[in-house]
Image 1 (tube, rainbow, N blue to C red):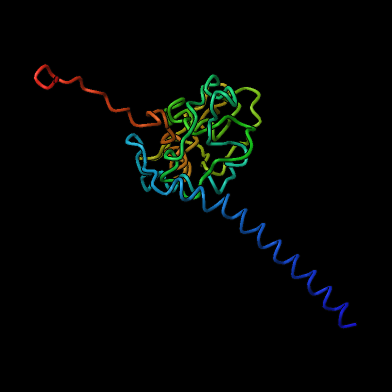
Image 2: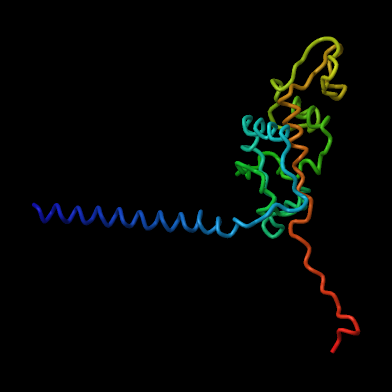
Length: 214
């Protein structure tokens, strides 16, 4: 009986040790090695930190699940025609230096947004698109976000931002006013512009002068 018990104990020990070895190897490959490779990557010169307003907009982006339908990682031309779609060059690690958490995404129900600020810099367009996507992209399946706006009769108050909808979607005597959350979200979207060079320029070799030549 004791021999049988010892056999099962040894079997369980092998199982536990094997699982720990696999877990340790996976952690090393998926966590430790990438960290060692990327820990010294610096933000590109053209990348600016988010402002407080843009950071608040990023939180609204996360809260409303935009990451579930939009990626932020254009792929290399050898993998996919993302550049031909107008989504920009393939992203590099430095592009995400100020992103916590990273919003790479896993699906593309909608287009990639890492460079949406370069493709569409109009804040007015973004506000209208958030309020009613189909007013700007016929057939779009993107949900509208009316809770980010206030709709009322009459004129807007001083300092408020009114959404200028296309005539076929605007209602007479009615104004659509963007709430602070909508304005912050649009500021974040417009900040998504990674069109600067991905890598620093290579040093240029300087030819030696006549005096320096042997």
